[in-house]
Length: 582
Image (cartoon, rainbow, N blue to C red):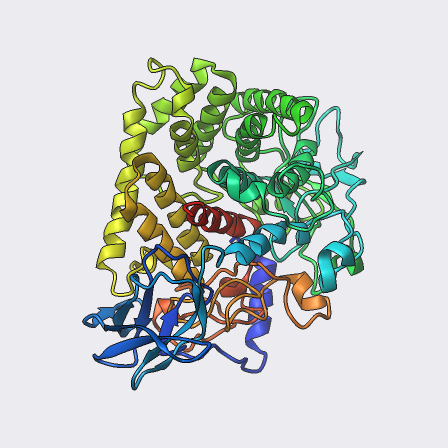
């Protein structure tokens, strides 16, 4: 999720000396299935690897009566898991109820539901996860249940690190930057990751207003007549606003302690001195983009703040124009300044995509064609665009321009066919992967999919496919997106539903300090863990050589079990977008 430093490397070596830990079983279950259930009128697939051929049955849990029967489709070898996979397709079963799948000689699945509301609870939990991530806020029993905790990291006294010093804010100056979300399993706050997270959540709202207007997250703001998801985004945006230097418009890269905290609750961390570090072009452009977008999305519910967002965005754009190559290089900064900073770097030296994203959002909020020309000059020349991540934001600008195209004069969008073609080319490749996949999922058919945070890649692929579905209305994009949600919720080679608190087998030990240190048996619910990874971690020996099986439910295995705000956000989009079809 973020680059680790030398300290973390030593930490991993120390872990290698620890006794062997319990690994996830290599085979997982014989039946891989979405453990939560299915919407009524969608494709319904289970993946079977315990038999060579035969029939399957869908039985009602209430009386074990057969509700559907079919023949398993011919086996195909799934290279990523090293297994022959047979497909059980029961899409024609649309009656709402609770069921389980049985394969004679191959076992039974866990129970699942067919219901138009089958994803309501997981959407609520993955959205409410941001409440549990709040910094400088007491999580009370009324709203947080057994995961309640006192206020911590008020951040009303934060110091200017020497790397961030300026004439008007010299090193050691105290500023106030409260609020925001803890970034991941740690207690620091990073602008570039906050930016893409807020974008994805606001996009989810824009895509599925009906879902979120009626979704009560049971947070302190739930009765203010503003959608709870926007209340949550607003809480983080206020912190982001405090990260902009009011004197010049530049944005500090992160707010952090010098080192990662230990496995303690946030209010029990001993070294609480926190800093803002160097202003960077990446952070400033990320800030400009999300603030420009916020001006449009929040203007109805937070009009005064929305106006402030646009002013801040334009000021940030101007700073980035003056300092277009100011990069965050943590090791180099540590050679020059004290104290050393050894937390997540989020370093990024390829920032033309950030310029294009920020220009796209600023154009949509100002209708100033200079911003559009800047964005299109980049999009016309780039050949390959990846699904979004904190370090690759080009596609975010394309989403925004295409989704708002109807509000743009034809003369200004005459070249938008270029954007449309690029998006659909990527979506078509994912559909092709889905159709040819032995596991019948768009995700999981290339080694490149199994990076750190692979589940976020699956969710972001789903987000892209839903964007293509909205643009074209073609069902194949929706089906391929749905297949990736299936993967995340259980139809994968590990046998896990990758969201804490959901499914019959779910992560119990996420790399999340609060869930580890709070004394509560179950982790904070609604957190998406990173998932299977083909990367190496010196402290651990994974029980399988196959990428799709390389998952370990262990706190110290951050490679597969870390959680992060930017990973939950596309999952929120995917769940709400798919459910919005009903």
